[in-house]
Length: 95
Length: 482
Image 1 (cartoon, rainbow over the protein chains, first blue to last red):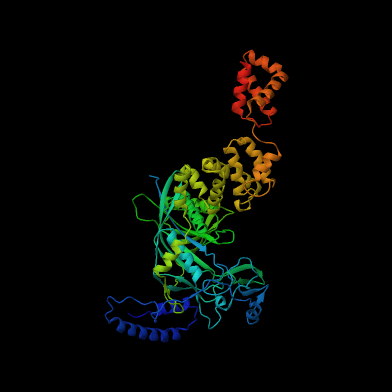
Image 2: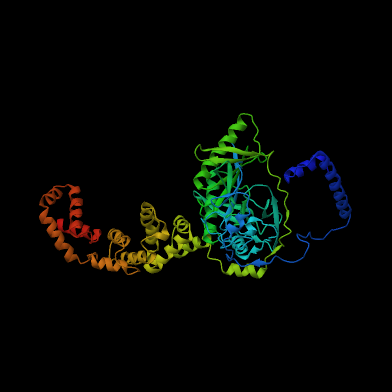
């Protein structure tokens, strides 16, 4: 399969990446190259092979349920662009 | 033909009662100063990695066992991608293809009928932060204390067919998650919030297009929102307009639902397995260990109350509506004795509940303890006091008289001299006085006025200060007047 320019623009929009027409064209070429690779891999017979959710076949380690983090708000907010009353300020968002 | 079928499915986000967040060691306590409980992981600072909280998994296992579901031996965390300022990573860690809990059922009671609601799945995920839209010089304020709080999203099949059923399900689920201790159920604080998927169709037709009502945070709003939505959809279709798939919000002020976003601008979440997290493996031993630590569940307790205490299904259901009520009731019966099981049920559900309601108190804050109530009802059972006097003693217990524990009622009965008079000669003496003082009434009765008899009983009861058995007074008075 190969992608259309429209699909590339849509993926870019979903990722909030602004791309020019020229960039979209270049990216289309790159992505289609990747799809060619995937097609080649799909020729391998994987019948009866369970898909893996992670490259390593190991289980998730668990953490005990304890609150151990100290408040570091001052340190974190020192590098934030804008804060007020302990809040991070961002451009107005109302859905 | 004006017959419509309603189809409803519910998704619930239950905030899990853990101390720390699902993927970080920050506290989940409610009400802290903004961003004081948002650590580097919650803020998605570069280089951080999530580590799964064992307590959150344990909650999911408990829930799965409580609804008779399959607890997946292997489940996988996925990234749900979208952009919003209260989601610093640009994705929410959730579960998609392989959730931790699969299937299960919950019995609901609607009026006199019991119905089974089938569950599709329940999965673990993290909550987002909060956006505050008050004016910060034209900007929004972000509080990330809630970001990373563990949630269990519980999804039903489209099994409900009225607002009443949807509310009954939400209430049953609310009671269950509190019962098994995985969620505090505080709806004002957002610990338990429901989304309802509603559609209508003609009988026998395929499912209609659904609209999703988001963030219902009270049972009353849920009822109102679904009722409004059903009528709105029917009116649209009858007017010849097709329903468009959409997400809507309920406005409690107008009682209406309004569109938040249509299908066209619906999110495209591009789920994929989160490479930062390995598959969650739950061993059969862990499940069995959890099973053995589970409390008796509401349905089982209800059956036991019916079998052991001879309660009606209605009473048993009411007394198992929450673990607090059930425990209080059983503690009271343990002291009052099994023969008082039915009066105990009445006292807990009627007298005590009414008083708590009047004073705006929860059962946990009741001034009368289960032991005190049990001690009181034991004295009714052994005829030390009448049920009427018991109400008086109850008031005294409420006021804090008599001290703590099962003996409190005895102290009050003794101090106030409330013991029932059973000695008939003592009662007869009092009746004689009453008859002598009310010669006119006696004459009326003898002239055939039945009403005068009741008045005389009243006077006699008054003379005994309510401490005589009314039945006994009645009989003795009849004998005297014969």
